[in-house]
Amino acid sequence: MKPKVAFFDFTGCEGCQLDTLNLSPEEVLGLIGAVDIINFREVMTERGENYDIAFIEGSITRESDIPRIKQIRTQAKILIALGACACIGGLNCLKNHLPMDEALRIVYGEDAKYYDTIPACPVNAVVPVDYYVRGCPPQPGEVLKVVKALLLGKKPDIPNYPVCVECKMAGNICVFERGLTCLGPVTRAGCGAICVNAGRHCWGCRGLVDEPNTDSEKAILVKHGLTVQQVVEKFKIFNTYTEVAK
Image 1: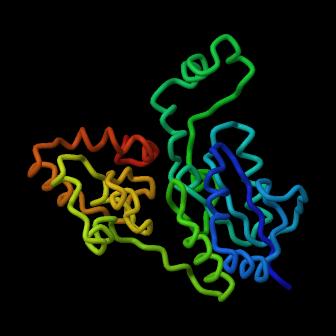
Image 2: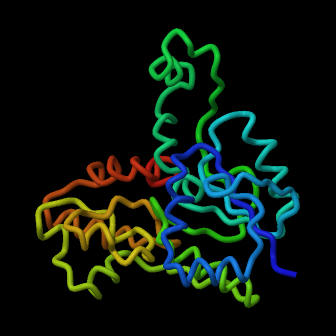
């Protein structure tokens, strides 16, 4: 029997799920032929409750999210965090810099009393996560790679080196040499340095490598007349939940 796969969304834009569909027709057909997708709100109305693999998009931001994610974890043999919000908390954690009552007041005004909110966190702050598909949004090919590895009974090969490696492979001029601040030296690769390739800088949406070379990062900042605080402020965009951003 084919493994049953379900996609679930918590607090997020659902762009990670939509971008998962940006595969070639051949890849889509191959995926459909290999697994049985029983729950995917973006593309189907049918819902199933028995699943082997659960993809989770979005961060945990409400009290009611906690029992729901725990129930999904209980049923799923494998749980995969999909995208920056699920993996590292993402943009939603920006509200954590404020008292929750204040965050509600700013967003909802006099209607704040109708909403419930808690400090945002990634999925692994509540339940164990087996694998991560990182990015904002993740690269469609990476989702496919993870599924293929699991079907073969292998551990997905997820990069644990910085984006700078991919930048050099792409032949990019270092962002710091262009007078910008970049999070690439300590951010986990796997995106192919897509933002830098497009003339921007790394925003850190894939989270930190396991053992970031902070000494090297500091040396780069000193060389270019920047401070650690300037970089920490940029980390808060996606990485507020991490110790570095705190």
